[in-house]
Length: 130
Image 1 (tube, rainbow, N blue to C red):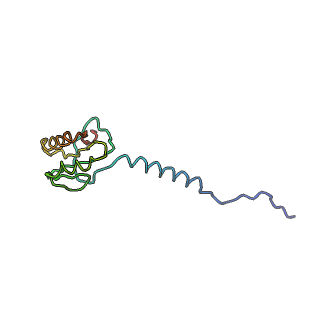
Image 2 (cartoon, rainbow, N blue to C red):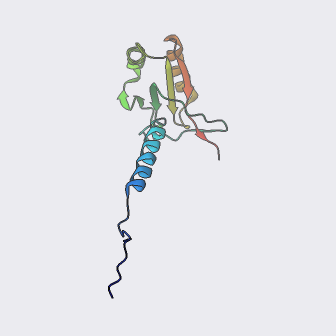
Image 3 (cartoon, one colour):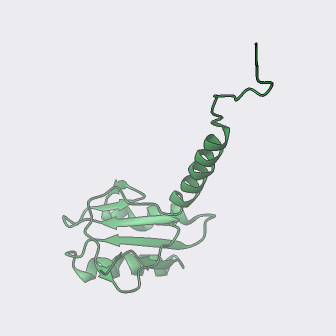
């Protein structure tokens, strides 16, 4: 007697749903990661209770050694006003200031004064207080 089943069970596993989920997660992380633009410079930011994430247009960084950087490019402090003027042309006037917590306040005020002369808003980058 030869009994054969008409219904065969397929032992293959379909990975299409798994790849769809991974693709959606990849898109999600790519979109959310682009909102935060970390500075590649070794700056120890001061902490604050209200630390908001701002989408950076122009970044000015001052290191502990009083080195100035505009968008991660080292510049001379005498050329700061000219470089910021060139960077602000045709863009929204927002400058994010990444200042090491050991830098004297007068250096921060100097950059903020230049930004005010160029009619730009200044936002000071901080890290959240734990």
